[in-house]
Image 1 (cartoon, rainbow, N blue to C red):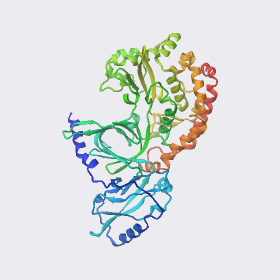
Image 2 (cartoon, one colour):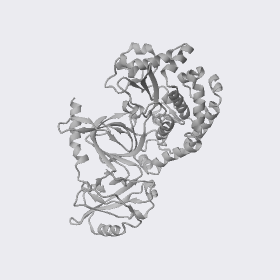
Image 3 (tube, rainbow, N blue to C red):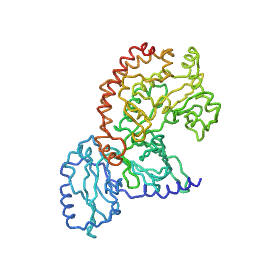
Image 4 (cartoon, one colour):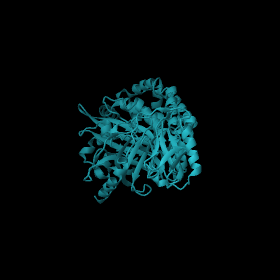
Length: 541
């Protein structure tokens, strides 16, 4: 209770930072023509020669179109998100929050190729000055192709695992409403990733009353769904920085919507660059949580997540209390403030009982009753394609939707970095990741699914063959796969964020080996083309 009160007190102190700075509202910005700042640059260069470089940096609160920007104070660098796919430079005035300080560019960046400036991360110098005081200081602006998030908190994120504060989201500055703010509460998240210096977080947006009472503050962030809870994924161990985004987009294009429900059985992710308390923290992926809202889980339905790789058995279910299931079974009940009762776990028990069924005929019959075979087909194709062995015994959600006659189970994948040739290794120096390109031509063993296929439960063999053929002509065609991969690479590389993240976190993985990834994707798809055409051979082996 004391910790909660302390967090809320910190939030109230920071509310003013997020919301009560005066803002200069401008009309819709125009695109600048080359040479737009020629006069301002001449003026700035003249002032630079005549003024003393003694202006206190803390007085410079750089704004664009009246919005206070994010700043890395050590390098005196401010970050402005722009549309990197548009050739024109966004119009708008650079000012300082302090009316006594003026801002002028020292270089006319409108004469430069926008895409090159953004991709290279070349900083543009600006002069912050006070003529009456005769002082100035040179600061710099980096134009990034990604959205930016600024967090202010009293916490030290290298020490504190639970914290609160204010948050501002910045989208491309050419938009009419390109910033939005909230107060938040947050905590560290992740399993293996908690050992990394760059942390991941779950950020819960809140509104705080004058009495200090916090309420959920649902917002649509970066074009994603309206939610009060967001996952900040640190993308530390994947040297390409694209695997999760690539896989999420793939699943969304054929699996997430392939249900009879008007719900998204997956997540969405958008790249951002994070700045905390005046310190650049690098490239992150903000993701929608897979939760009851996302899957439209009612009060009479259930959502479970396999978080750790643990054996499942009814004996273990009966031998431990529900509070111990996460440790013993590696599984947790989602959407509840506690571990739930045995009644709340009855749906998951039905899945465990199915896995334990020894009679083949009974197994096939119960599988048809419990599983949605279209979803099972999609998830099998997806996991086989990406060689997601880390998603068989963990990193999977199990949603039980109530239907006529009982419950139907749907699976939703999560945490998709150990894929396409990256596998787990128990070596911290390698960030627990190693490359295994030979797996591109090997079948991924999934005993539960293999048994379903061998028994042809629910006609799954034909479902797999027909769905694979359909997908290879559409979503998973060689051309579409390459286009999607290029889009992901474009976001992290041509935005300049990949290089900045590598400089900020030199001990993290940044190989940028996209050729190896491409080769693996091509080889894997060709392998599955041949294997799925001969499902009998797959079963016999």
